[in-house]
Length: 105
Image 1 (cartoon, helix red, strand yellow):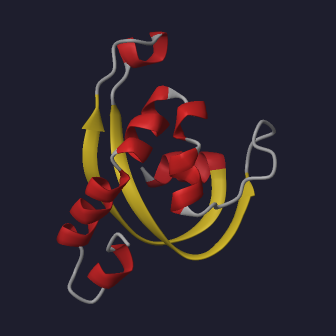
Image 2 (image 1 turned 180 degrees about the vertical axis):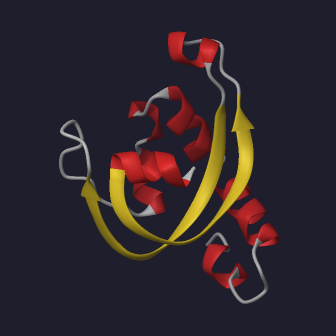
């Protein structure tokens, strides 16, 4: 997972948890791939794109992302539709010192 992040963006990772798998055969990409969903905690909201196609990356509040889920591609939409469950799984797998950072609102 870290290799994929490094290829796409520059962000300071603190921790991560794998929380789900996605298998969606309804798209060409999904038909030949499956996804591993990670919840990543970052040190701050500083992020920069590493590829020419990534212009102006930014973090947005969860509530805003969930409201715009219908505009996302399928894998992102699936994650946003189940965000509270995914965050709960990350909290359950985190160390006791880190768990409060992942608890859903």
